[in-house]
Figure 1 (cartoon, rainbow, N blue to C red):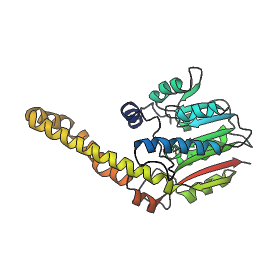
Figure 2 (cartoon, rainbow, N blue to C red):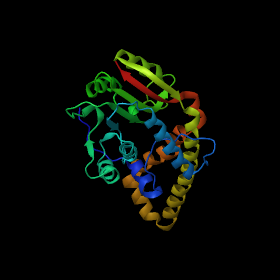
Figure 3 (tube, helix red, strand yellow):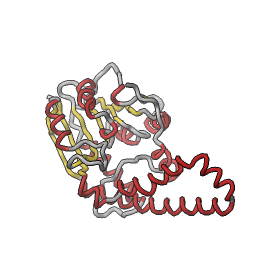
Figure 4 (cartoon, rainbow, N blue to C red):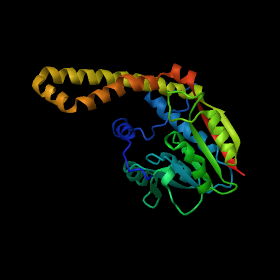
Length: 272
C-alpha cells in the first residue's frame, strides 16, 4: 500500500528553532560536552563512523530516510554518488538545498520505491524501525545485487517488548538478514555512546513541559472564556499532545530504561 506524503514535524521544529540538521542520536566521545553543542558534535561523529563502514568499490548509495540531506552531502564530499529517499516533502525541499539542485531525491516510502535500478550500498540511519519488518529485506534484495551491501545504525529491542515496539528485535533482525542471503560483516554496539543524547533530550523536554504549563496557565487566567472554548473544540487533541509530552516522551527518553531494554548498534551486511 502506498503511503501518503507526510511532514516530520519533529525534525522541522528542531531544524527551524535549534538549527539542528539531524534528528538521530549522537555518538559521544569522552571529551564532548553534554549539551546541545555536544549533541551536534556527537551527531557528526556518528555520521563519520557510519560512512567509514562503507567498503571500497562502492559508488552509488541510497540514503534511506535521508532527512534534510546532511549525510548525503558528506557522502558526496567523500566521492560517492548518493540519492535521497523520504516520504516527507519538507525533506525533499531541504535535501536539494543541502546536497545541490541537481541531486536525486525520491519522495517515497522505502517499501514503495521503484527506481528501476540497483545500488552498491543502502544506507540506513535510524530508519529501519519505520519500515515494515516483513518487507525490509525483500526490498533490500530488490534494490541491491550480489556484492552490494547494507550499512545501518538503529535501535534494536533485546526482547519483544511494548517499549520501542517499532524497532526490530535484534536476534530476529539478524536471522532475517542471514535468511535473505546477507552476511553480517560488521557489528558494533554503541548503546553507551548514544545514551547522553537521551539525557540531554530529557532536559530539553523538561524545559518544554514548563513552557507548556506556563503558556496554558497564562492563557487560562488571561482569557478564561476563550480557554474554555479552545478546550471544548480541541480538548482531545490537547489531551493527546499532553500525553505525548508528559507520558510517552519521558518513557522513550529514559536512558536507564533504554539501556535495560534496548541496544543501539551499527551493522554492515554484505550480499553474497
